[in-house]
Image (cartoon, rainbow, N blue to C red; front, side, top):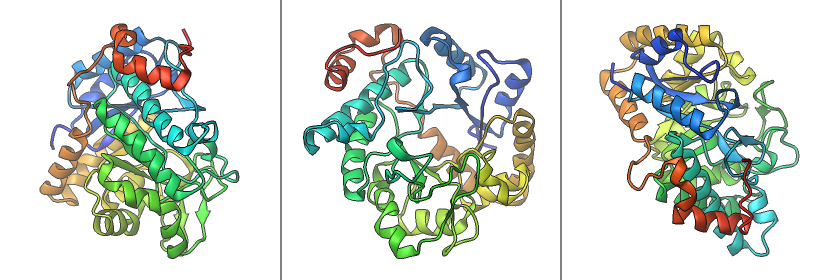
Length: 352
């Protein structure tokens, strides 16, 4: 198996146990995602990421640092506004685009400075008041406005050396249910989804390094949630949209994934649908089992060329070392100073 395996797992705490070290060295492991429980201070999380890299340099190090209610880096980092506020609190749309670009730069520079490769950002869903899980995590209610704001955001990320991951394909914002705790079902037809929720993904696919499908069933089109569906991943995303970046499954421990079967079934279904990397979080025993299951799955299912292609895609998400700023020098970096001033005015709003 190539150096970048298809499983992304998490850690229990702020240090790495001996058992976790073995899992990180496993050939099926390709990434680590950290949560708030793993993060105390900039210095501590920098050290933790360095330890992860020392154990297995090929691992992709990820975090969710969207802004608003979804940001894992808190103490010593900027309190980033929710994406919806970039337009709702702007005096005109051009200002919103400007703020989106600088929000992305602050997020990316701060996240990269402590050793992460990516934040799973941005959310490309439609902002609706009915969705309990998306809401103000999204840029706007209108697809064209989402595209414009997200394009500025992605530009800011890429300029800082971070690849963008759009989520939650083909759109989670138009269903009420939260896929973390239940299985959402979207009953709309293809044309409606294509003209609304899917629009931001299709128009921005060439700018994205990764896409994360939703654990949502689109019942008029397939019986499986999108991340386990060959229709959505292989046909729509790969064939129709010609997307050639990384497809990350959302966390398969979520309630919205349970309909597929047990953890082994979910890993197989995600890989068979065309996902390159499968997230297994908050269940260390099942994550360990998933690593072994992948070894068996790869012997019986995909071709070696497919495995190599996925591994290369995953490695392409690693942060560029060019112009990388470490945390202790961050506030002297002119890019951070400029973007922080635009975003905050400059009140230096951070949690120290």
